[in-house]
Image 1 (tube, helix red, strand yellow):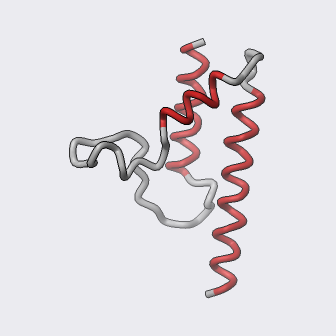
Image 2 (cartoon, helix red, strand yellow):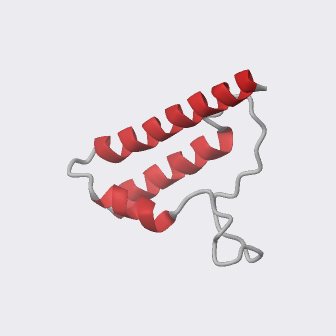
Length: 86
């Protein structure tokens, strides 16, 4: 439902803003702004994200939730590897 999709979008934005990247500083724009050139600076591709949400068959959004959480886990691993390399 649209309410559930908005709930996941909100959780996704919160996670992106608060960071699965832990203590890394970031300037995150979760919504397009007037200064964005057709959203090219967006951290989230909302078209793709909406398509992922539509693939959920159940009301608990397990499929999209697992994709989002795996994304954040991979991002954390990448940041950790980058820190070790520095």
